[in-house]
Image (tube, rainbow, N blue to C red):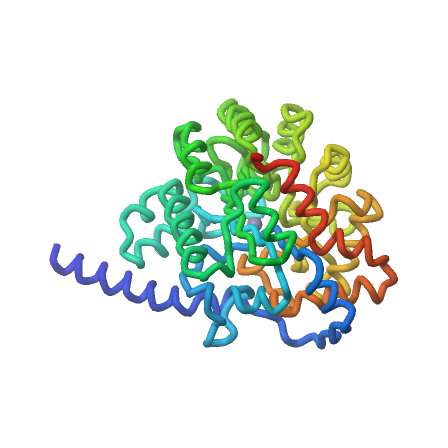
Length: 382
Ligand SMILES: [Zn+2]
């Protein structure tokens, strides 16, 4: 027994050391492609207008968000780099379960959970046990970051909290979860998560959960009875319902039970531009737009043709052509194990390319933040 405990401690210590290094491996920036230089006008638009990105997975990594990463750079995003690009609102999504071993035909929800290893190695028994506790933990982390930021960041809990975003006084942090496994076994837990600051409910992530089935899951059907209950509660609370990673049938189910609720697809692309399971079907995106919803265009080559600024702007322009200019925004998926060609400090290069393509300034202002601000104002509690 003693020997077993010794071996276990050594294994967990090794995982912990690997954990410190892992971000440098999985959240890399592809520096092989030359970037354009952002024009003075692109920089000025960032300095004078709200800039918003509606999805990152930074909370999973325990480095200090308030400091510029010293080793690297490590990851795609931290406060100094976000401030460098004049970003004013970020949605921090808590990933609470990551299956080991993906299966293209559908990853089973019984697949071993990588985060058990990660949190085990951090010697954190509660977060080791359940996705719900991990959601509570990540909420504490974000509140801690905001508290220590000296006013450079603030939590966005209601419509009023969007004012300092609009006036560019401080960076607003919206807390979300990625996958309703975060809610745990009892749907009533959604009220606890709301009280802990959660304002975006991502219904599914990589595997099916008790409430909703994933695009990548084994069943790929839609919402369960409990899932319908959950969606109703989120709508009533003023939580944003996020359909990224949700199965196509699940998207239909949400559309059929939320007639007047603006919906979000936080990090995706359009199926007619990139034809794979990860993108959203055009007809569904159109219906979401008709209801005042928002589509966040991702910065990696699974959802746009390539990870370059030009290819991401192709994705944005394609979405505008289909959905109109009021329903498209940035949904980078920074720190989500993607390999973009620029980190958040270089975000003005996207604005530069949009201007270079001849997009009008009013349209560009909507894409870089105006649309997302209007969307959050239409959903969050007063
Ligand atoms: Zn994701």
